[in-house]
Image (cartoon, rainbow, N blue to C red):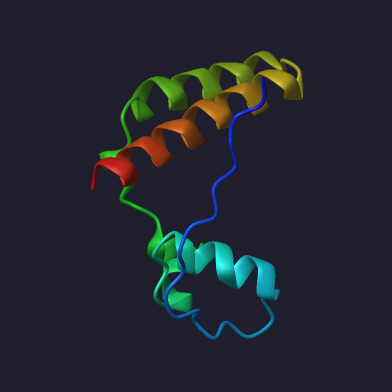
Length: 92
């Protein structure tokens, strides 16, 4: 069986220039109140020292580069770091 799809009640939809009405509705349902919350530039990232497992990820990446291993290994490392970043941000 398929899970039930439920519509959420959405309050005020934030005016986000250049964002489709569907995404604006999704963001509103998730509590996004301003375009600043969607900024992904470097100044909005958490400090690298706050990322769980960052030391190990850096070691893996450096070893991969030094060994000339395939880009697939680098991608795997990047995903691990990205997953840790999301977890740290969710815990904040």
